[in-house]
Length: 226
Length: 108
Length: 219
Image (tube, rainbow over all chains, first blue to last red; front, top):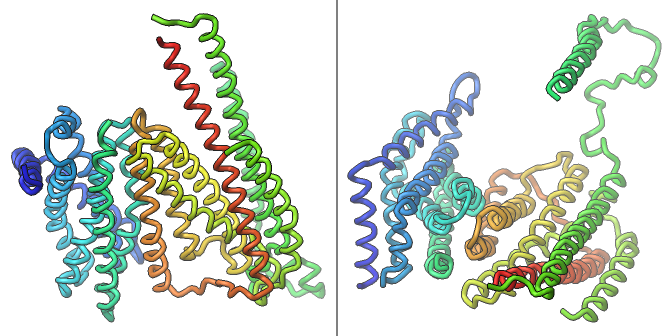
């Protein structure tokens, strides 16, 4: 089976399962919204939410809900040992990784479709003024986060203490993505918009994505096999 | 055991309560208006806020330098000691297991 | 590493560290910071060795994952532990210097923050190996490879992040009198690193022998 066919099969399977129950989607969206609220109440100045914190709050919500979604998505694979079954199948191992990655990306994109307008609303943040750069930041950042997260979550499926180990490993590793996302978004939200800066951050994210997806494809098989 | 713990907690609470009394007394001592005296500020140990030393100057440099170099050595030595300690544990276990193997160990 | 090589290197390292204080004391004072800048002669080389160690761990992990050599895994673990050790030293000596130079213990300086992130990544490596259960050696290898590859991204992003909040980091431009002690200390610390790495790998080697012996007794 070709690489693309394998990828499509896996992604389709994940999306179909999710479409039936929508469990991960709804719970992740709810968690992301709750996150935004908690941070909005946490960062308060003169009794009102700090509007400058919009960029940071958006990306923290993405990071936290992304970690949750990753854990849940792979928990499903663990319960019926389906990941092992997938690894036994005579297909390209990296295709499994890409298939799972696409599934996670689509899930996170759906969450962000709800999250970004909500943040724009609550913090009066003009997130849609520079729509292409904003999409670049969101796309690049989510891809970078999901690329590293999918590998780590797959790695940890059979490990002990996997619930706490995933955030422990993922957050320090994705700090550059977080910095790029927050600073890029902030550059677009500030009074005198700094487009070159935002572009620079998008470029860094693109570079990060290329390097780490390559690394993940390269190390997926040896890391996952016994 | 439980009685000892309860007694200990009780004593601790009593000590905290006793310490709180003089602390409260100090706090609630009415701030005496600064009546002008002829003693100098240095004699009273009172330093106006705009004459406070800069934060850079409150800790003398030699102390910081000594602390830094000292920490480097302490950290390295502690690490070496920890390797030694773990090594002796492993060596001891190795001897014990090899003795078992030599004395016709388990083989099924 | 043979016993003889180890002893020779150890004696050499000891000699260098005995001589280093003389060089450090003789070095000229930096104009704005005075005595406290002398922390630099240990702090900066240790920082460089820390980043070096993260690369050693990453490369060894790659060799382990793709070559399946157990000795590479032992090197990766030892190097990760040393990254955490040297990182800890950097993160303690840095604020001690900063307190005098800038008046505050921590100021999100670009280099110290990058060191903190790398330190956290490799601390997570050690936690994974300790608590991840069986098979965590391979998983940790993946983490080390990612961690080492991440170093330039971490440094760049933190650097750019910091320049948006302009607080000048006082990077001493190395006067001629300062270059010699600095490089001398750097060589001394690389030597120390090699020695510690050898010791730590030796420990893992003995542990592996113990494991094999245990397996033999099981029949």
